[in-house]
Image (cartoon, rainbow, N blue to C red; front, side, top):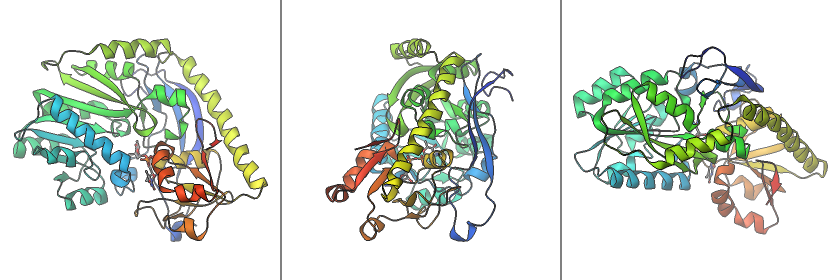
Length: 406
Ligand code: JHZ
């Protein structure tokens, strides 16, 4: 396999999480006895451009046609995107004549904000069920992967875009080169492309290895993104760290003729990445070593609780919980059930580990001794919701960077 960014063929494997089922392939009861599909989950590093990527790629049609992740389930996420739309509108002086296109728009969580400012919006979303939810809420959404045909269609009907966004989707795309070439066609000359992706430095430092799953094909540093965009005649003119999904970066990109001044934050972040060794294999080998140690700690922590006859439930069935549970081999013998507030997930079972996902009423009927917060990125929101159980003596566990009771 060659590097997705620079085509170098000397990729070095540094971490294997074994064979794993697809993170969002939650199962219906009648599917529990079927043979589930397992695929290798391994990361490799390109020492030429510093990109980290999966060694094995699953067909996106299998992963994204019917998608169980609805962005607006989380209050803090709704707020994040509402603030993001407001900041973009103010910074780039968008008005009622502007057009914003969101790639991988999910249920329209970001576009709702733009629409509230009177800006024309179009979402492009491959999942049929999720794009239907957006349409029903009045967000104009094209149910498709983002491709040349979609771009020509938007230009014909609405003209070129002032802003193109892609939040939590850039890591999911194999052919990022054709996506960015299509973004260039869609954007006005002075238009801005803004992406949010999980930041590999945060993954390495905070040990959030559960964010590694088949949907995430690439794991980005700013160093790798700079190499990529420059090789497509675009430039990054600003970057900020944002706290979604355990730590992400928001990257602002323009065409050559764009008129935004480059921020000093870019060089600061690039220098910091070099200092942290993100351009060298050693940093990743060190991470891999710690991943195995933390897995052992999580397993013995859970085993310890079971040895004391404690009952354990989970809160949140995010995609990343599939990695954590499968890699640690924690199944329904350890966790009785998992609460999830998304109606698309309740009634289903976790991939590989077959733990039932139920709605939050279950906590009243069958209160556990401990709750492991699998959606740890929303710990604060979940703790607030479940305060009455903490008051009754239920203990809460955050699994990463290493398991701890709070
Ligand atoms: P959450 C998603 O991953 C999906 P996931 C995707 N593949 C991706 O790339 C990453 O984001 C970046 C539940 N919950 O957002 C809702 C409650 O039940 O961490 C979700 O199922 N009650 C696009 O799936 C899950 O937790 C609550 O109060 O890892 C959170 O999933 C809250 C706050 C959440 O993303």
